[in-house]
Length: 212
Image (cartoon, rainbow, N blue to C red; front, side, top):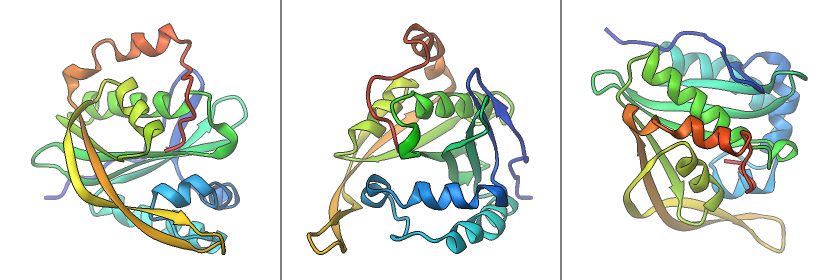
């Protein structure tokens, strides 16, 4: 019997992580039409509101219902503004593992939101969902994403050579594929010890531009 993630909300001091809804369509489309999102993810460029609506109303519910993953909107607690996405995918309920990724909107970078959202999600996965492993994969040159992984306590396990396709925009405005390596990170329940304190020591903020 396939397990599934519940429809939940996770709160931190500054953020609320909740299921995506149709009111998020304009902000989601705007967030995905970003140069760095285009460079490091497989999100189609340009990204339309129709594609955002399909993600919210069809793709995300299907992934959750099938037990494969969960898509959470990251919103500011005070303003309710959409500032990012946390995505869980390739979930293996027998192994009790899942793969996590995150994107932060260009208008919300530099605030430490990626670290805060990823840590809160990890704490929920290990606590309420009893998972035993979270995996992250970052492109070799995506230093911002790697710093987020380090910030929440992830351990680098190695390199998958030539396993990632990044994207480079040419002078004519079109995107071309560029092969690179994946760095594989893992997070286990015991790795979270001290991660919360480390974030608290910096006021919950990071000094780099964390966007993915």
